Amino acid sequence: MTKPVRFDREAEEELAAAVDWYESQRHGLGLDLLEVIEDAISRIGKAPLQFPLLPSIPSELGARTCSVKRFPYSVVFLELPTEIRVLALAHTRRRPGYWRSRL
Image 1 (cartoon, rainbow, N blue to C red):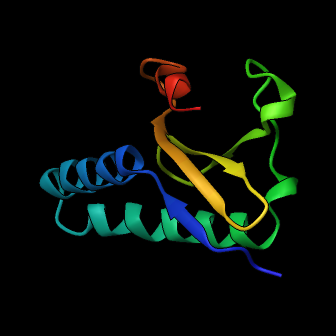
Image 2: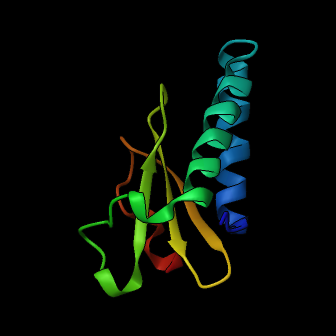
Image 3: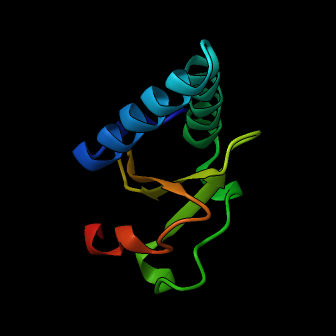
């Protein structure tokens, strides 16, 4: 069963900013990023437990991460009883853990 995926406002803003930045670097690159994020979201919705728990977060919170292909981002999310909540689209090389206050 696929759970619905909901982006927190901050995660939506991060995705929009990343897409805009990549698109400004090369036409079509932002859309490529959006495509790999959509693929990751689809995989998360279908089988969220296949992704690793974040070791720096208490395991009872259930924060998980899904790395995306080709771009230095990961989708940080929580599996809730009725939905998947995306906390951040985190750049893997900048400010590690900046999103922790969103838990």
